[in-house]
Each structure stands twice: as C-alpha cells, then as structure tokens.
Length: 488
Image (cartoon, rainbow, N blue to C red):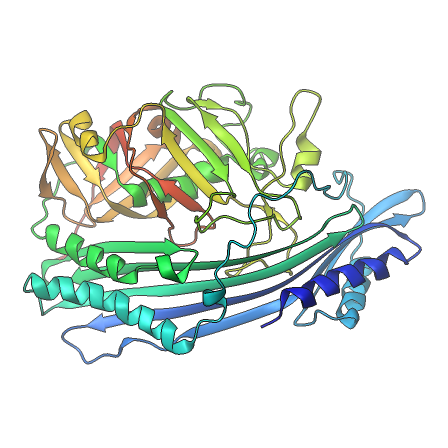
C-alpha cells in the first residue's frame, strides 16, 4: 500500500522538476495507487463445492504526466506514464515519454484550472483500507448465508446454485499542475451482486448491496433478496409479442441508463456525433415528469468523489430537467473544445477509470459519478402498478446494447429474472425467464414515462462506471418480443 503523502510528494516534486525544463509551458502530473479485491461465490447444492473462494487481489500504481511543450512557433502536447514507480526517477521517465510522444493538437485549449473548494472531506472508511483477508472472506460467507437461510426456511434444499461476488475497491490519488492545482483524494467502495438459481424450476433471482463503509455493508441482505426473488418466480408464464405497459425495476432502469442514456448525454458522444440528442440542447427529449442529474458530492453514495482526476471539485450537473435537455457530462478537454459564446459546460467529470480504479495509464475520459433519476411528481412504488393496470413488471435485464449505433437510439435487451405479469394493478403471475426481449428506441422510452417512484436505491450493473440512484419507472407502449426458451 502506498500512502497519500508519498503520492503528494511525488506530484509536487515532479511539477518542480518539469517546470525547470526550458521547453515546457505547462504540465500536469497524476499519481495513484489502487487495490481491487474480489471474493467469488460459487455454491451448488448437488455437487461438492467450496461455496466461497479465496480473495483475489490486484494492485496497481504509477505516474501519468501530461506536458504542454513549446516547439518553435507551435505548441505540442505529450503524455507519458510509468507503472509501479512514484519516485523522482519515475517522473523523469514519464517526462521523457511525454516529450517523445508530443504532437500538435489544435483542439487543446488549456490545462484545467480549479474553481471552488471540494464538498467532501474524509469520506472514505479507514476500516476498509485496513481490512484483513479473514474479514473479506467473512463477507462472502455472509452473502451466501443470506441466500441459503432463505431457501432453507422455504424448504428448498436441492437444485440450488448461488453465484456472485463481493468487490472491494480502494483508491488513492494526488494531482498537481502548473495551473495551481495541488490536491488529493481517497475513496473506498464495497459492492456485492448475488444471483440465486433453482435449476430444476429454471428460475433465478438477484440481490445487490453497496456501501462506502464497512458498517453499512450488508451482503446477507443481498443473498436473502436473491433467494426470495427466485422462489417467487417459480411457474413463470410466457407472453406473446406485442406492445405492453411496463414498470421497469431499479436494475433495468440502471441498465438502460448505464448502457444507453448516459453515454448519449456525454460530450464525447456529441463530439463524435454519436448521440440521438445531437443539436437538442434546450429542447424536450423526455416526459416532463423526468429529471436526471449527475452529482459526485452525495454523502454515502459509492460514486462520490472529492475531486475529479483533473483536480476539479465534483458537483452537480443537470442533464434533463422536466423533460428538457439542459446539459452534458464534460471533461476539461472537450469542454474547452466545444464551448462557444452561447454555451459552456462544467468539466466535473474528467476521470481516469480503468480496470477498477483511478488509473495513471490513461488521460481523463468523461465518466459519470452518481446518476440521480427523479420524477416531477413521484409516487410510492406500489402505485406504479396501478398506473399501468395491465402489463409487465420487468425486474432484471441483461445484454442491453445499442442497435445501429448509439445515435439511432435503437436498443435491445433480454428479460432474464425477477419479472411478473401485472393484472388489475397488482402482481398476477411470474414471467418465464429468458423468453422475452425488449426491442425499442430509447427516445420512445423516455417520452412515454408516466410515473416515477419515490423509493430509490443505489444500483450498479456489470461494466458500469457510475452508480445510479435508481427509482422504478412506469412506461407505456413498450415493444416486447417473445423468443425461444430452453428445450425441455
């Protein structure tokens, strides 16, 4: 483990070194240390198994150096990185790489300048930073216990498969620049996602839990929820292809926003003309009941950060307000490139997320923090069913991806678990898993929202960089297609 003071000394001394080089105009140095720990759950009732596997841990650290060079009458920029070396020697090596890689970039405007003070301070959990292997494995057993206890109480002891993981992420970083930035950040994340299956019934259920602190982390609840859901969906029925009113649960809402909506609300997609919202700033793109914003300062949310990987304090960026497109996520580079006399973008979302942490090997990309979804007039979750009356409650989807490119807005996804038929405003019967695919356009989904729930939960999906503070959402007129099931 590398301490914060070591990282801070590295970037401060590194900037002093770089400033002495005669052809340097500006420079930014980023140093980080990360640890990513995973405990796998793999329980099978009918085959001998370990149930919980030993923790797997990866650590990575290093320096990333971005330099603005004077090259005759031109300005050139270069980036160099060095792994596992946060020393003066590492800074020299990164600088040599940056000089060797320098190119002319007419779109580069300036390095970031920090404005304002960070909201969050000391928001990580020292207990997570120092957690023992024994405590990590115990978290895995707690998740498994939650599922097995629920199955036992409901008299299910055979044909059970329980899988998933416990993930712990520890992050430390420091950044300094010739523009006056000199700051650091330290964060901890705990997350679990558990899937339970009753194989002979061809059903599965899911549960998840997230926290920034060990004291608030409850893998047992995630395991219990996964088993409850699997049991409830026994005896699922098929539906025919057609257009249905649906309620999207928190996981599907998160999946849709992570894979389709939020990527389209980034300046990187605007820059490449790969968004259905191109030229729509200030125009209506969704139901007037929908509000969406990104906020990296929410206390206790696992996507929160003190500063971005560009040294800029995190904050709130409004994206959709009462159905109107009011903003885009931005980093410093694209904010500078795309701003004009009519519009500017706050560069709060420049992060170097890669391989489960804040990674020195890449330059800042545009990444969300906590995506908050709200309704203009929110209702209790149970009221959503009465809003659709007859239709489908969709509890879990996967393989959600754009069709014909992100700009087209078309997407597909498969309903795989935790879903039910709704009749007369109440849950009627389970929906048979893996027999229905969603084929729709995201703009139709957004414009046909009829209600948003008050109740929200921090939700993460596989491959997502952000946390979604997710409600349940009722949508009318969703196209669902029946697909072939398993051969029996």
